Image (cartoon, rainbow, N blue to C red; front, side, top):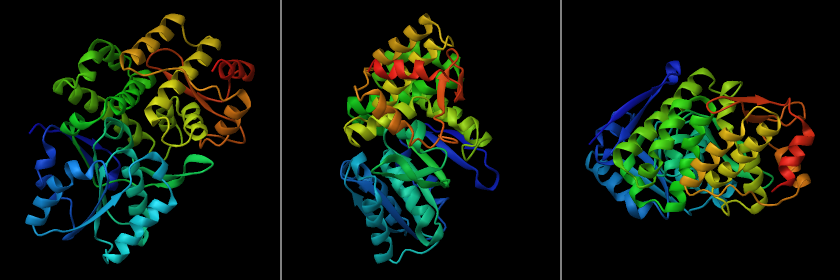
Amino acid sequence: MTNQILNVALAERAYPIHIGSGLLDHTQLLLQHLKHKQVAIVSNTTVAPLYLQRLTSPLRAAGIHVVEIILPDGEQFKNSETLNTIYDALIQARCERNTTLIALGGGVIGDLTGYAAATYLRGVPFIQIPTTLLSQVDSSVGGKTGINHPQGKNMIGAFYQPKLVLIDTDTLNTLPQRELSAGVAEVIKYGLIRDAAFFDWLETNMTKLMALDQAVVTEAVYRSCQNKAEVVALDEKEAGERALLNLGHTFGHAIENAMGYGVWLHGEAVAAGTMMAADLSLRMGWLTTAELKRMQAIFENAHLSMQAPALGVDQYLTLMGLDKKVQDGQIRLILQQGIGKSIITSDYDTEALRATLSLQ
């Protein structure tokens, strides 16, 4: 087992992130965070056959009563109906306030489980065990939980922090190539918004990262989580700097919504959206052509397409108007002022934005 530890510094809500190979087999890391002899593990039909028994067997051997809740797999199931499936199972199993919910899966499972934990009996403990790269470097850290609404992604939810994030990098060995690439989009994001040195490192190590070189994967996950933890500690509820973590997301969420949830993976939409933000930044004179080409090259090396769908300017603007960062009716965007520096702003040329949207 390798184990690197980060801490999300949120005073009484602080919690550790454990990152390394083989951590699923070290049940003690979980046991020390369990207040009660009952847990409910939420997973899906893809992840459960791979890892659920490996998690449940030692827990049961330690005297823990385990409730298993298996959901269908896919972004299209991140909705109120699936959330009610979790509630139904918890109530049927007579789960109490000190029952810990454990999310075993990707971002959808983490978001659903976290929101269920935030709202069941007005709040029960939960633990994140993310099994995709995207969830390991982004959605499992920071306490954003929620579900999608037919009119907008992540429109319903709560900020609710986990007690522990346990990242076993070995789970990436069963991840499809497309899912891996989608996760790398979020890794690249940290370099773009606040860590130019990390972006440089990724340019050098992208081939090894895509080949799942263990040392490179661990370093990429660690540095991503380190960036996320620092931002969350400064701005837990997205009043300011945390919004920068949404680089590419305003465009990307519009793509996911328009195409149908699950047709584009979240990371794929974020990659395309990030390049749309870069195009607008270039038009504003905030980004150089050389920097834009570096961004294009790194996404290409991660096997990510940067061609957004042609939705039309008006549909893009309508869907982007549902974004959670909209303020006083004004769409706010995260734009680039170079590699490693992003800003959130509504001070952009609307005609330049329309020009960016019309190119897709």
